[in-house]
Image 1 (cartoon, rainbow, N blue to C red):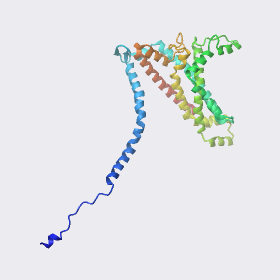
Image 2 (spheres, one colour):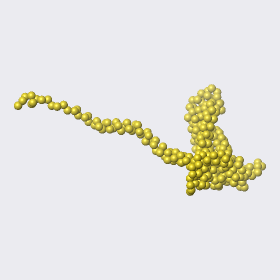
Image 3 (tube, rainbow, N blue to C red):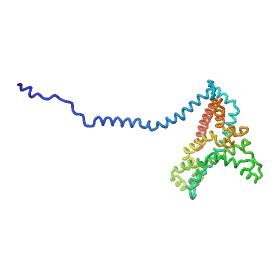
Image 4 (cartoon, one colour):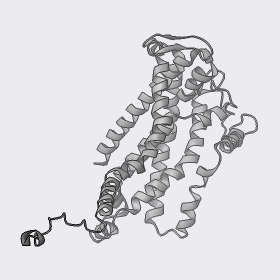
Length: 323
C-alpha cells in the first residue's frame, strides 16, 4: 500500500448557499415590481372607465359627425359637410343665442350672489353659521323636476304668483313662456335658485383656507371690511373662483333639463323656439330625428368646442381681473 495515496487532501467543494437566499431574491424582485407598477394599477380603473365612457363616445361622435348618419338606414361619408351646414342653420344660431342669453342671466348674477353670501358666512358675527351653511345647500339636493314644476306654476300667465305680484305695481300679465326675454328670465331664475348655494359653499371653503393672520394684520393697519375683501380675499380666492367660473360655464352651456321641463317636455323650447338651447337642439337632431344623427353629432362637437373656448376665455378674464 502506498503512503501518498492514503493521505491525499479532499477535492474543494462550492460553499453552501446561505439559508433563504432564493426567497430573499424573490421578495426583493416583488418589492421592486410593486414599487414600479403598483401606482399604474391603482389608477388604471379610472382610465379604463374614462376610456370606455369618455374617450370612446367622443371619438365615435366625431366619426359620426363626418357622415350622413341614419340610425336606421345608410351611412355615407361626407367629410365636413355637417359642419358647413351649421354655419347656415338658423335654428343652430337661434339655439346658440338662447344658450348665451340664459347663460348670461344665470351665471353672472349667480356668481356675484354666491361671492357675497360666502363672504357673509365667512366674515360676520352671524349666529348659527352651520345651520345657514347647510340650509343654503338645500336647493341643490331638490330634484330638478320638482324645481321646474314649482317655477312653472309661479310663472303661469293666468294664475301664477309672479304675475299676481306684478299686478300690485301696475304691470300687466306676462306670458313668460311666450317671449324670448321672459322665458330666459324664468329659466335663469331656476338655475340661480338651484346652483347659488352650491357655488357659495365652494367659495366659502376657499375663503376659509386664507390665513386669518392676514385679516388680523390688516385690521391693525386700519383696513376696513371692504378693503380687506378687495385686497386679501379676492386675490387669494382666485384659484377657487376660476374653478367655480369654469364649472358654471360648462353647466351653463350644457343647460338642458330646466328649459325642457319649462316647455312641458317640448324639445323645441316654445312654439317659436324662444328658449331652445344648444343641448336641446343637439338632442333634437341626434336622437329625436333619427335620420340626422350625423348632424346631431356635429352639433355636439360644436358645443364641445364652444365650451372649451368659453372656459378658456373666462379663465383668462378672471385671472386678469383678480390681479
